[in-house]
Length: 267
Image 1 (tube, rainbow, N blue to C red):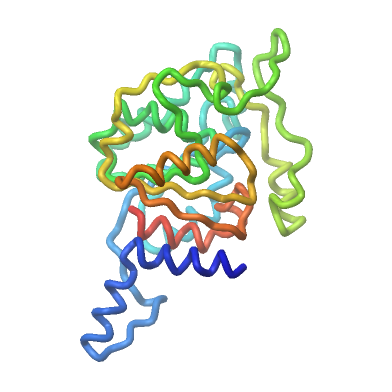
Image 2 (cartoon, rainbow, N blue to C red):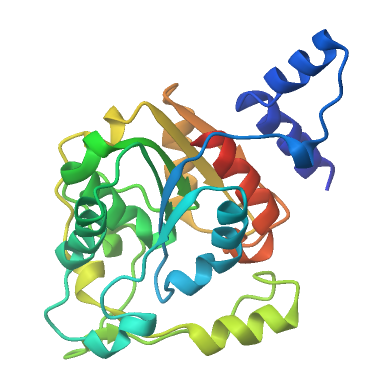
């Protein structure tokens, strides 16, 4: 817990929250955090494997209450779009899901947020919509290099003829502290189209050209791919790297207030 509190203090400093405090002290006034105003932002939220837009509900509600525009995606073949599951869904399908939303809604100055697997299609989508994106936040997300597939970074066996990976029937003990969250998540997860895990992503550097980049590592979730991504970002001064040591992998569900605060500062 001590490590977590230090991390959060670093977060506030690194994302500039101290600027508001300094202004309040200089003017002799105290502004309560609940009354602090932030500019309206546009967020596009990309879920991880087996998840849909439902996984972002708690963060979506909080951002909208602050006056932000929020578009939480469900990728083809999952959640309320699970009836579209078929053998022809590939990573390109999910890349197009993201890019089409942005292009058809005429979105600009976007904060693109990707969780877990979502880092793969989000990285690919930036090749099309990078000029419309002003900031990105990778939430314990995959950070593929050109030519890498999700399965290259997160190996798993493939059943012959399978068109999807089955949804999990149980969750790691430290994933959620509230049994109600466990029951809710298990009632919502759906099989994930396997083609999206197998197709390599084509990248030319659009992700790295985004001016404001944040990576959030949730080390309670032990995953070599996320450790590798966080290490790469720490070695690159254009990324801000944050850690939350109290939440499991699904921080948008476990600690939505914390993540909302991060997103408003990282956008």
